[in-house]
Length: 106
Image 1 (cartoon, helix red, strand yellow):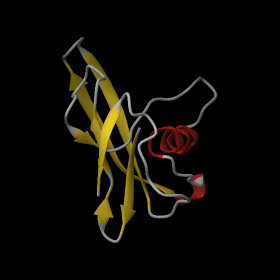
Image 2 (cartoon, helix red, strand yellow):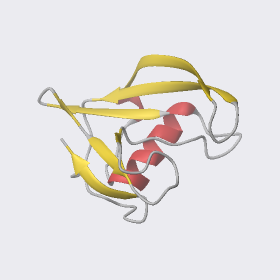
Image 3 (cartoon, one colour):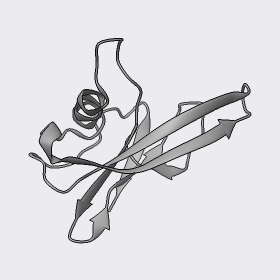
């Protein structure tokens, strides 16, 4: 899942660092389901808190895009990515995982 935080017609991007995948490139805050019982919206809310330090209400999330893709490196996998947008949140964005992210860009 990917999170598109929108404020004043601008979006937040984070630069990947030290992850071994797409390092140095900007992306939306993103993550995976945390367990079998976690919903997509719960995962997005959790990832927002863990990665950029903001609190979201799942009622404020909007599914804006679904992408089916094939990732050949490092292994041949097919994935479905969900993109959620939020225009409301609590708190100021900040780097919460400096070992995985070295810049935030608006």
